[in-house]
Length: 118
Length: 113
Image 1: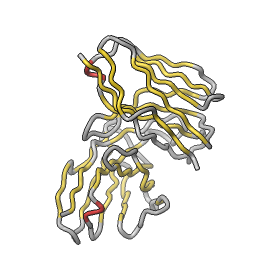
Image 2: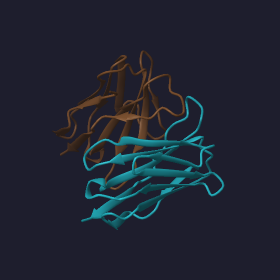
Image 3: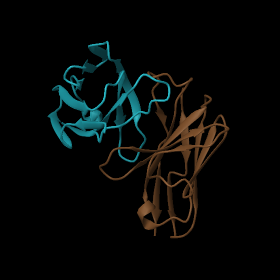
Image 4: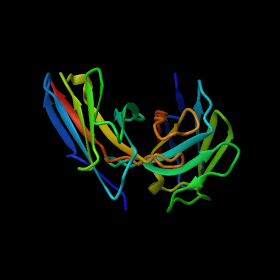
């Protein structure tokens, strides 16, 4: 159980275009999903917390107008990288947590999206 | 600011031996500490959680300790196998519902056959 599906797994786009990444919880409902970015040999950096039916909460330094998050249902959150630039190339990973978010609830991660902006 | 340090970027261990990974944290008093495994090009997978009032937790060949005085957690894999080769991430968290999970950089473990 607790499967999180992320799509696409890889995407190459040209500078200036937008890319949408989907994150779905397949067998559970996720009121909260988290979006991370990971550069090579670096830790996962939390970008934003996505809440179903409300606005996402962005971490300091993350531009909300550039990284649009929509969490329209209990099983789907999307991250859109708008006007992508080469420096946005990274590994983007979503995660979700079962239940109301107690401190001991583990995160269930998707398999990530490798974004390359040329 | 909160800081998480995991020992060395890569750890080479002979198959069959015990691998021990270290996680140190500063400016932080987590109520829980989670360990995840991440394979190249994949998302992390949850392994174990230990609470601040627990000294040790075991699951099959895995053992985690949590020393709140030293501000350290140790992650052990006994009878290591080449399939255990991966990056292991330490993730402390506070006890409040809105507390975020912060990840360390991870330790890359190579089990040598």
